[in-house]
Length: 219
Image 1 (cartoon, rainbow, N blue to C red):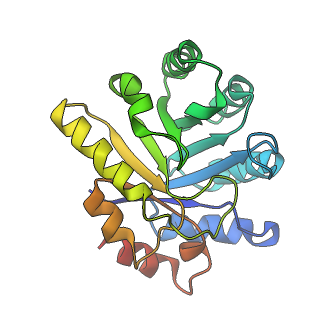
Image 2 (cartoon, rainbow, N blue to C red):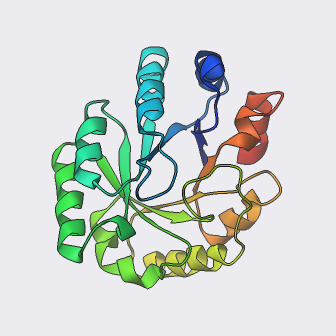
């Protein structure tokens, strides 16, 4: 089943309430919260995303999909656990070793929240195979993390395909999310590669009719 996680990264502050309410009406499946610290990636959205997550919680019951692009993973996990999100995803590249990856996975799960693990375009998907049975979602970045509005890197879909084949062969129950440059023209390619959750930002929030855009993406 195709699910849409709408990124509100590029929503202007003066439009935030209107857009969040509009996405509630348009039936997005998740609100995608892009938390950046200015260290793991150049941009710092930490304060703004905290404000937007507060707004979402006041306006909507739609699940929150938190994507941490930060170096101090534990600090931001603690911050966002307070919002009772559906899932918190952190980057494999942000932690020092595999033991720390396991510790963070367990920490999030023990708090009653689903956990996702994300990989950047240049990270081999095979590096995280050991963690797949213990997480709920793998987020494959289809652009370099840190900026909205980038074009999808076609080679990343081969990584999605490889991941899908591996989890099918090993009977692992896990979602595959893709993030970056997803729009109506290429969502079918990502779906055929094996993804089932699609992060879409500007293509939805800057469209004339968000509900129609989400419907078109799903169909």
